[in-house]
Image (cartoon, rainbow, N blue to C red; front, side, top):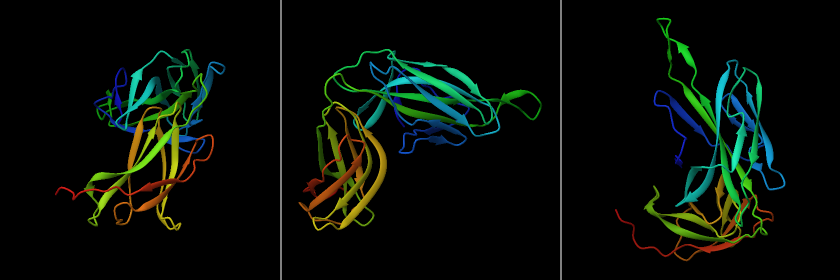
Length: 263
């Protein structure tokens, strides 16, 4: 679960379902709630945007909205309070089958690196009548929807990505060494990965992984690959689908040389 510093807190009496919905479709869904669009882009020229939150359930729901600065460290998402963004309304109720528009405004100053933020729409607990007729709190599943917000850099966008295969710490169930694909983003804007395909030099497909993962500027990301046993220094080609301005070229990598895994 992402680490937060600041005001995001949970409620102990409730079960919290964290729905980090920033997928490929134009609509983010979490149980009876849906939000569109699934990503916002703001700038010094376009300082405001709107989200539409819909409630597909019959019951009214309460929502609290919070915006946080977003950064990544050691492959983890970290969130910090910020005054760069404002939202209105910050807390509201959505009637059953109703909708609510949430406006987001940018009041910060763009920098040389893309600004990364997230807006959290947190469902609030509702009071319930207990068996004795009193007002209490019932066990509930509360939803949190997270929408990414990006502010482009004032300088020209620059892509600088490096890729490599690294050895994971353990073994696969079949006894072979697990490998992970690592990307380091030294550019000044994010990259959203939507699919990774691994092939042999002859074009034979070894793995295909649909995903929705972000790599922020200055950050790195690694994820395990489900590959058959391969010898050290075996050549492979990685094909990556992303939201980059231009299609990424195929990436040539080699399997790493590793020693025996510890038991």
